[in-house]
Length: 298
Ligand code: ATR
Image (cartoon, rainbow, N blue to C red; front, side):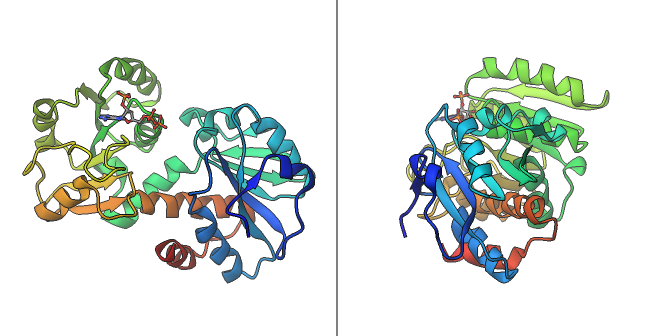
Protein backbone atom coordinates (compact mmCIF):
# COMPACT_ATOMS: atom_id res chain seq x y z
CA UNK A 1 0.00 0.00 0.00
CA UNK A 2 1.13 3.59 -0.66
CA UNK A 3 2.83 5.42 2.26
CA UNK A 4 0.15 8.06 1.94
CA UNK A 5 -2.82 9.10 -0.20
CA UNK A 6 -3.20 12.53 -1.78
CA UNK A 7 -5.82 15.23 -1.37
CA UNK A 8 -6.95 14.59 -4.97
CA UNK A 9 -7.67 10.94 -4.14
CA UNK A 10 -10.15 12.05 -1.49
CA UNK A 11 -12.62 12.92 -4.27
CA UNK A 12 -12.90 9.27 -5.24
CA UNK A 13 -11.20 7.35 -2.46
CA UNK A 14 -9.87 3.86 -3.37
CA UNK A 15 -11.83 0.91 -1.98
CA UNK A 16 -9.58 -0.75 0.62
CA UNK A 17 -9.98 -3.85 2.79
CA UNK A 18 -10.73 -3.11 5.59
CA UNK A 19 -12.30 0.16 4.39
CA UNK A 20 -10.51 3.44 5.15
CA UNK A 21 -12.61 5.17 7.82
CA UNK A 22 -9.94 7.07 9.78
CA UNK A 23 -6.98 9.17 8.69
CA UNK A 24 -4.23 11.52 9.73
CA UNK A 25 -3.69 14.64 7.61
CA UNK A 26 -0.64 16.88 7.46
CA UNK A 27 1.95 18.19 5.04
CA UNK A 28 4.30 16.35 4.93
CA UNK A 29 2.64 13.20 6.29
CA UNK A 30 4.62 10.16 5.08
CA UNK A 31 6.57 9.94 8.35
CA UNK A 32 3.51 9.76 10.66
CA UNK A 33 3.48 6.76 13.02
CA UNK A 34 -0.24 7.15 13.77
CA UNK A 35 -1.38 4.30 11.46
CA UNK A 36 0.98 1.86 13.22
CA UNK A 37 -0.68 2.84 16.51
CA UNK A 38 -4.33 3.00 15.42
CA UNK A 39 -4.54 -0.02 13.09
CA UNK A 40 -3.59 -2.48 15.87
CA UNK A 41 -6.19 -0.75 18.07
CA UNK A 42 -8.90 -1.23 15.43
CA UNK A 43 -7.89 -4.89 15.04
CA UNK A 44 -7.83 -5.45 18.82
CA UNK A 45 -11.39 -4.12 19.05
CA UNK A 46 -12.65 -6.05 16.00
CA UNK A 47 -13.59 -2.85 14.15
CA UNK A 48 -13.78 -3.31 10.38
CA UNK A 49 -11.94 -0.12 9.40
CA UNK A 50 -8.45 1.08 8.66
CA UNK A 51 -6.49 4.24 9.39
CA UNK A 52 -4.54 5.90 6.55
CA UNK A 53 -2.25 8.88 5.95
CA UNK A 54 -3.44 11.64 3.60
CA UNK A 55 -1.32 14.58 2.47
CA UNK A 56 -3.43 17.74 2.45
CA UNK A 57 -1.94 21.06 1.31
CA UNK A 58 -2.25 24.25 3.37
CA UNK A 59 -5.54 26.06 2.68
CA UNK A 60 -7.48 22.89 1.75
CA UNK A 61 -8.44 21.61 5.23
CA UNK A 62 -12.11 22.67 5.13
CA UNK A 63 -12.53 21.13 1.71
CA UNK A 64 -10.80 17.95 2.88
CA UNK A 65 -13.15 17.70 5.88
CA UNK A 66 -16.23 17.92 3.60
CA UNK A 67 -14.77 15.15 1.46
CA UNK A 68 -14.17 12.99 4.57
CA UNK A 69 -17.86 13.35 5.43
CA UNK A 70 -18.85 12.46 1.86
CA UNK A 71 -16.57 9.41 1.82
CA UNK A 72 -18.04 8.03 5.07
CA UNK A 73 -14.99 8.57 7.32
CA UNK A 74 -15.54 8.47 11.09
CA UNK A 75 -12.65 10.59 12.22
CA UNK A 76 -9.37 12.30 11.41
CA UNK A 77 -6.24 13.35 13.28
CA UNK A 78 -4.76 16.65 12.25
CA UNK A 79 -1.05 17.37 12.47
CA UNK A 80 1.42 20.07 11.41
CA UNK A 81 0.67 22.53 9.82
CA UNK A 82 -3.13 22.17 9.93
CA UNK A 83 -4.12 22.36 13.63
CA UNK A 84 -5.07 26.04 13.47
CA UNK A 85 -6.83 25.86 10.11
CA UNK A 86 -8.86 22.91 11.47
CA UNK A 87 -10.25 25.09 14.25
CA UNK A 88 -12.24 27.10 11.68
CA UNK A 89 -13.13 24.12 9.51
CA UNK A 90 -15.39 22.12 11.87
CA UNK A 91 -19.09 22.62 12.72
CA UNK A 92 -18.67 22.41 16.51
CA UNK A 93 -15.48 23.28 18.42
CA UNK A 94 -15.05 21.64 21.83
CA UNK A 95 -14.54 24.37 24.50
CA UNK A 96 -11.12 23.01 25.52
CA UNK A 97 -9.92 23.01 21.90
CA UNK A 98 -11.08 26.63 21.69
CA UNK A 99 -9.05 27.49 24.80
CA UNK A 100 -5.99 25.66 23.51
CA UNK A 101 -6.40 27.40 20.16
CA UNK A 102 -6.05 24.28 17.99
CA UNK A 103 -8.00 21.23 16.78
CA UNK A 104 -6.08 17.98 16.30
CA UNK A 105 -9.01 15.54 16.20
CA UNK A 106 -12.12 15.52 14.03
CA UNK A 107 -15.04 13.23 14.86
CA UNK A 108 -17.83 12.88 12.28
CA UNK A 109 -21.24 12.00 13.72
CA UNK A 110 -24.40 11.96 11.56
CA UNK A 111 -22.63 14.09 8.97
CA UNK A 112 -21.65 16.75 11.51
CA UNK A 113 -18.02 17.69 12.21
CA UNK A 114 -16.87 17.96 15.86
CA UNK A 115 -13.38 19.32 16.62
CA UNK A 116 -11.34 18.35 19.71
CA UNK A 117 -7.86 18.85 21.07
CA UNK A 118 -6.34 15.70 22.53
CA UNK A 119 -2.79 17.09 22.88
CA UNK A 120 -3.55 18.89 26.16
CA UNK A 121 -5.43 16.00 27.84
CA UNK A 122 -2.86 13.56 26.38
CA UNK A 123 -0.11 15.57 28.07
CA UNK A 124 -1.90 15.30 31.44
CA UNK A 125 -2.43 11.54 31.07
CA UNK A 126 1.15 10.94 30.02
CA UNK A 127 2.46 12.91 33.03
CA UNK A 128 0.25 10.77 35.24
CA UNK A 129 1.48 7.54 33.64
CA UNK A 130 5.19 8.42 33.45
CA UNK A 131 5.56 10.16 36.80
CA UNK A 132 2.52 9.08 38.84
CA UNK A 133 1.77 12.76 39.40
CA UNK A 134 -1.00 15.27 38.72
CA UNK A 135 -0.01 18.53 37.09
CA UNK A 136 -1.85 20.51 39.79
CA UNK A 137 0.68 19.20 42.35
CA UNK A 138 3.78 20.11 40.32
CA UNK A 139 5.85 23.22 39.77
CA UNK A 140 6.41 23.27 36.02
CA UNK A 141 9.04 24.76 33.69
CA UNK A 142 8.03 24.89 30.01
CA UNK A 143 11.00 25.43 27.71
CA UNK A 144 9.72 26.65 24.33
CA UNK A 145 6.48 28.06 25.74
CA UNK A 146 6.28 30.46 22.78
CA UNK A 147 5.77 27.67 20.20
CA UNK A 148 2.48 25.91 19.42
CA UNK A 149 3.21 22.81 21.53
CA UNK A 150 4.60 24.80 24.47
CA UNK A 151 1.66 27.16 24.50
CA UNK A 152 -0.76 24.20 24.61
CA UNK A 153 1.17 22.65 27.52
CA UNK A 154 1.15 25.96 29.42
CA UNK A 155 -2.57 26.62 28.89
CA UNK A 156 -3.53 23.01 29.71
CA UNK A 157 -1.36 23.06 32.85
CA UNK A 158 -3.03 26.21 34.16
CA UNK A 159 -6.50 24.87 33.34
CA UNK A 160 -5.58 21.68 35.23
CA UNK A 161 -4.73 23.72 38.33
CA UNK A 162 -0.94 24.11 38.15
CA UNK A 163 -0.07 26.86 40.66
CA UNK A 164 3.53 27.52 39.69
CA UNK A 165 4.61 27.85 36.09
CA UNK A 166 7.88 29.13 34.60
CA UNK A 167 7.76 29.94 30.89
CA UNK A 168 10.99 30.05 28.89
CA UNK A 169 11.49 30.81 25.22
CA UNK A 170 14.34 31.71 22.88
CA UNK A 171 12.30 34.67 21.58
CA UNK A 172 11.32 36.19 24.90
CA UNK A 173 8.91 38.68 23.30
CA UNK A 174 6.47 35.79 22.71
CA UNK A 175 6.05 35.21 26.44
CA UNK A 176 4.28 38.39 27.54
CA UNK A 177 1.15 37.82 25.38
CA UNK A 178 1.05 34.22 26.66
CA UNK A 179 1.21 35.36 30.29
CA UNK A 180 -1.69 37.74 29.64
CA UNK A 181 -3.69 34.92 28.11
CA UNK A 182 -2.87 32.55 30.99
CA UNK A 183 -3.96 35.16 33.54
CA UNK A 184 -7.49 34.88 32.12
CA UNK A 185 -7.72 31.15 32.98
CA UNK A 186 -5.42 30.97 36.02
CA UNK A 187 -6.53 31.22 39.63
CA UNK A 188 -5.44 34.29 41.60
CA UNK A 189 -2.86 32.18 43.51
CA UNK A 190 -1.09 30.96 40.37
CA UNK A 191 2.49 32.17 40.07
CA UNK A 192 3.55 32.80 36.46
CA UNK A 193 7.19 33.63 35.77
CA UNK A 194 9.14 34.03 32.54
CA UNK A 195 12.79 33.53 31.72
CA UNK A 196 15.20 33.42 28.78
CA UNK A 197 16.82 30.29 27.38
CA UNK A 198 20.23 31.43 28.63
CA UNK A 199 21.70 28.72 30.80
CA UNK A 200 22.11 31.15 33.70
CA UNK A 201 18.40 32.09 33.57
CA UNK A 202 17.22 28.48 33.44
CA UNK A 203 19.62 27.43 36.22
CA UNK A 204 18.05 30.00 38.55
CA UNK A 205 14.68 28.31 38.24
CA UNK A 206 15.71 24.64 38.28
CA UNK A 207 15.94 24.36 42.09
CA UNK A 208 12.32 25.49 42.43
CA UNK A 209 10.61 23.37 39.74
CA UNK A 210 9.60 19.68 39.69
CA UNK A 211 8.63 19.02 36.07
CA UNK A 212 10.75 20.25 33.15
CA UNK A 213 9.10 20.12 29.72
CA UNK A 214 11.02 20.61 26.49
CA UNK A 215 8.51 21.89 23.93
CA UNK A 216 11.13 23.26 21.52
CA UNK A 217 12.26 21.33 18.46
CA UNK A 218 15.78 21.13 19.96
CA UNK A 219 16.84 17.48 20.12
CA UNK A 220 15.15 16.34 16.91
CA UNK A 221 18.54 16.05 15.25
CA UNK A 222 21.41 14.27 16.96
CA UNK A 223 24.12 16.83 17.62
CA UNK A 224 21.62 19.57 18.58
CA UNK A 225 23.04 21.80 21.35
CA UNK A 226 21.97 20.81 24.87
CA UNK A 227 19.20 22.96 26.39
CA UNK A 228 20.63 22.64 29.90
CA UNK A 229 24.25 22.63 31.06
CA UNK A 230 25.68 19.26 32.15
CA UNK A 231 24.97 18.44 35.79
CA UNK A 232 21.98 20.83 35.95
CA UNK A 233 19.40 18.13 36.69
CA UNK A 234 18.73 16.49 40.04
CA UNK A 235 17.33 13.00 40.62
CA UNK A 236 14.08 14.50 42.00
CA UNK A 237 13.38 16.28 38.67
CA UNK A 238 10.77 14.90 36.29
CA UNK A 239 11.91 15.42 32.70
CA UNK A 240 9.47 15.42 29.79
CA UNK A 241 11.02 15.85 26.35
CA UNK A 242 8.18 16.28 23.85
CA UNK A 243 10.68 15.45 21.12
CA UNK A 244 10.86 11.80 20.12
CA UNK A 245 14.01 10.79 18.26
CA UNK A 246 13.90 7.39 16.57
CA UNK A 247 17.70 7.23 16.34
CA UNK A 248 18.12 7.24 20.14
CA UNK A 249 17.52 9.30 23.29
CA UNK A 250 17.81 13.09 23.01
CA UNK A 251 20.52 14.99 24.89
CA UNK A 252 17.94 16.03 27.49
CA UNK A 253 16.83 12.43 28.10
CA UNK A 254 20.48 11.40 28.32
CA UNK A 255 21.06 14.12 30.93
CA UNK A 256 18.02 12.93 32.89
CA UNK A 257 19.31 9.37 32.80
CA UNK A 258 22.72 10.46 34.11
CA UNK A 259 21.02 12.41 36.92
CA UNK A 260 18.83 9.42 37.83
CA UNK A 261 15.73 11.51 37.07
CA UNK A 262 12.45 10.01 35.82
CA UNK A 263 11.80 10.91 32.18
CA UNK A 264 9.30 10.62 29.33
CA UNK A 265 9.49 11.48 25.62
CA UNK A 266 7.26 12.42 22.70
CA UNK A 267 6.23 8.80 22.12
CA UNK A 268 4.34 8.90 25.41
CA UNK A 269 2.38 11.95 24.23
CA UNK A 270 1.64 10.38 20.85
CA UNK A 271 0.24 7.30 22.60
CA UNK A 272 -2.03 9.12 25.03
CA UNK A 273 -3.32 11.75 22.62
CA UNK A 274 -4.06 8.88 20.21
CA UNK A 275 -5.94 6.94 22.88
CA UNK A 276 -8.11 9.99 23.63
CA UNK A 277 -8.83 10.44 19.89
CA UNK A 278 -9.93 6.79 19.75
CA UNK A 279 -12.27 7.41 22.68
CA UNK A 280 -13.86 10.37 20.86
CA UNK A 281 -14.44 8.26 17.75
CA UNK A 282 -15.74 5.07 19.35
CA UNK A 283 -17.03 6.18 22.75
CA UNK A 284 -15.19 3.32 24.47
CA UNK A 285 -11.83 2.92 26.25
CA UNK A 286 -8.87 2.64 23.87
CA UNK A 287 -6.85 -0.61 23.83
CA UNK A 288 -3.77 1.18 25.17
CA UNK A 289 -1.43 -1.82 25.23
CA UNK A 290 -2.18 -2.74 21.59
CA UNK A 291 -1.46 0.87 20.63
CA UNK A 292 1.76 0.97 22.66
CA UNK A 293 2.97 -2.31 21.14
CA UNK A 294 2.21 -1.00 17.64
CA UNK A 295 4.18 2.18 18.28
CA UNK A 296 7.15 0.34 19.73
CA UNK A 297 7.22 -1.97 16.71
CA UNK A 298 7.07 1.05 14.36
P1 ATR B 1 5.36 24.87 16.87
O1 ATR B 1 4.82 26.26 16.91
O2 ATR B 1 4.67 23.97 15.90
O3 ATR B 1 5.48 24.22 18.23
P2 ATR B 1 7.83 26.14 16.13
O4 ATR B 1 7.24 27.36 15.60
O5 ATR B 1 8.96 25.54 15.38
O6 ATR B 1 6.83 24.92 16.28
O7 ATR B 1 8.30 26.47 17.61
C1 ATR B 1 8.82 25.53 18.45
C2 ATR B 1 9.53 26.14 19.62
O8 ATR B 1 10.89 25.73 19.49
C3 ATR B 1 9.55 27.66 19.73
O9 ATR B 1 9.42 27.98 21.09
C4 ATR B 1 10.92 28.02 19.20
O10 ATR B 1 11.48 29.21 19.76
P3 ATR B 1 11.21 30.66 19.11
O11 ATR B 1 9.84 31.06 19.57
O12 ATR B 1 12.27 31.52 19.65
O13 ATR B 1 11.31 30.46 17.62
C5 ATR B 1 11.72 26.86 19.71
N1 ATR B 1 12.97 26.65 19.00
C6 ATR B 1 13.14 26.22 17.73
N2 ATR B 1 14.46 26.10 17.44
C7 ATR B 1 15.13 26.47 18.57
C8 ATR B 1 16.51 26.55 18.93
N3 ATR B 1 17.47 26.23 18.06
N4 ATR B 1 16.82 26.96 20.17
C9 ATR B 1 15.85 27.28 21.07
N5 ATR B 1 14.53 27.22 20.79
C10 ATR B 1 14.17 26.83 19.57
